[in-house]
Image 1 (tube, rainbow over the protein chains, first blue to last red):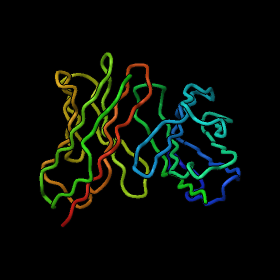
Image 2 (spheres, rainbow over the protein chains, first blue to last red):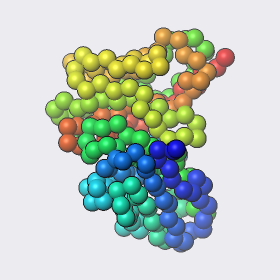
Image 3 (tube, helix red, strand yellow):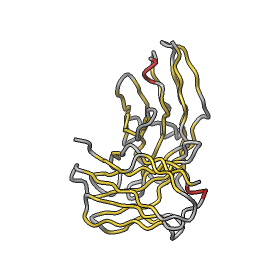
Length: 113
Length: 111
């Protein structure tokens, strides 16, 4: 029943490891996003896909690689994790690219030790 | 570029107090404006929106009016409840542009 679901909810790992976060939406939306929220709650967009096509790629290290196998899924793979990657990562979706209500998942708390 | 500024928190109020969270924006053209709310441990959810000047968005007792002359979209509620404790984000979206969020304002309502 969950509209936007992401897994895992918590991820604790060592520096240098590679990890993935998965996201799925069952709303039939065309556009999906990854956001990063830091410890001060500041929210920054990382990537956006529209119908499996990358449309927004903010200044994000190339250790972060999104993958959209179909328009209902957008996964985030992170290579060589660093301490500064610790944050909450939110997946979101919207009906279309612009000017639309965003639906957020409940977040993945990533802690890099 | 487009940007959103919000009053700094945290804001602490007693139950039934009046709430105002200030939000101002900088944008070209006529953006849509939003308030999102994030309850503890959850993702953001849309609280209300307004798409043109003088529009008033409202939901769950919260209101905000799109003021183009002052480039503002202040959030108000007449009587807050403990359950309103959350982080509130003002946001804007240009006509063909991504959503930009303000830094968020944390609200704590005490009984």
